[in-house]
Image 1 (cartoon, rainbow, N blue to C red):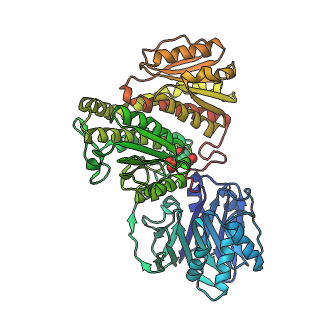
Image 2 (cartoon, protein in one colour):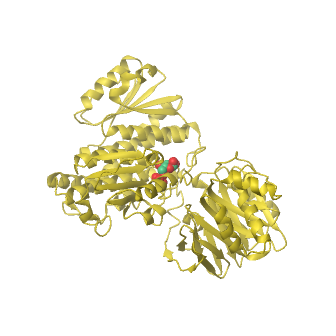
Length: 608
Ligand code: G6P
């Protein structure tokens, strides 16, 4: 989704701003632009499509500048076009970039038109430039104008602005959309994503909602919502360039799939000891708090929601706790009833998903015992706003389709199920058995990754289809859902998941030789039942791709039976997901799609 980078320096900033845009490409975007202060004018370049095209314009025009703002846009209001791309300007003087959505843009736009401002885009963002220009022309400084503009704006925003009349300062503001300042030597930066400036500095200041800041090459000043100057902590983060480069892999997604054994080790390391989970791994006081929990509510989006659906089974079977799970975008609109001693759990790779954050904010008004997040980004809004947390330590995930984040979320959620059971003095033997299996998990995942050759062999028979059906039962239904999501996200093949028992209540009508049916058949009490469901598919000509325990044997006719590594049943959802990721990747490769940045999608969805 949209990305902001801005710089004030004693050297030329054009190139480093474009490099920063490249670093944010993974977030998903459809156009890019830059505004560079050049003393008497502001160079303004925009292009639709890849950042590369903007870079080519820059090479042609060679603008020199020590102060600038740049943006990648993911269209919300108005199609992807040059006119809608950021930066937006007012009278060749004030230039802004904006992430988020201005909810009252229609009325603000009308009032600015009435004041004589011309609009050249269909966006909700352009009015911010005009508003700032309006207040600056009334004699206000940029900072004052930003505060006055903020009073008018409803919605979520991160804004960076420059003004022709000031060649050394840029002004930024944050409300419910991530924004940070990066501290360099003789230069300062602002960005919506630390990865954008990770090659320039390791020192970051994460702004808080309501903050406004002015930034020059030499200094920065931060003011809070009451306009008082404030000091915010400097966070040192060393994001290695290895973590953000593809290495020898063709795509980030491929790299991230094969990083999973190591990523899962990082989630588990230092959190288990002997035959149990360690105390307070979710934060000081968490073990005590867990002994009071009587009910769980999970909210999340996309792949993270699927991790939650798997975990809901574990909370019930290991910690004997009832669990309700909601799409974060739906949760606050169903007027949820909160039972006493309920724990709210949010799950998020980025920690910046607008709906998940909004659900957390809504839940804060309710009577929850506490909020807890399972998250991959320790500096994220969700991490900062939750009472307790566990970071998955997966390292940056760049591919839009989530892989290692999902697997590590599952490992983190298993630690949570074990911690809840421990605090409630439940199932010590089972806990010991699961801890043993968790220790073996990185190895088991490495074994599952060896199915690559088989996936390459079967990918062509799926790549030439328009649809696919994924089947699972029980805890494997969410894994089937995640498999279907992965396939549709990156290969654009329409894919659906069903609990296998539901097959004859509708989807069986879809089965013919053009419908690949991908089924998950681990050894479990329901495996036999699932196999009968698969017989129904076979009898109707559907091609079966069955991922099964080595003990499962069935005649799949022209289809494929893929035996998975043996492992403890509690680890099977994690392990069976691995070949589904590889299969989607290999199918997408054959279809030639943009695997790391699938069309229309964004990595971090920062608008509701
Ligand atoms: C987007 C991403 C998905 C992700 C979802 C939730 O849709 O493309 O991969 O699962 O957002 O993101 P989160 O960062 O909250 O896990």
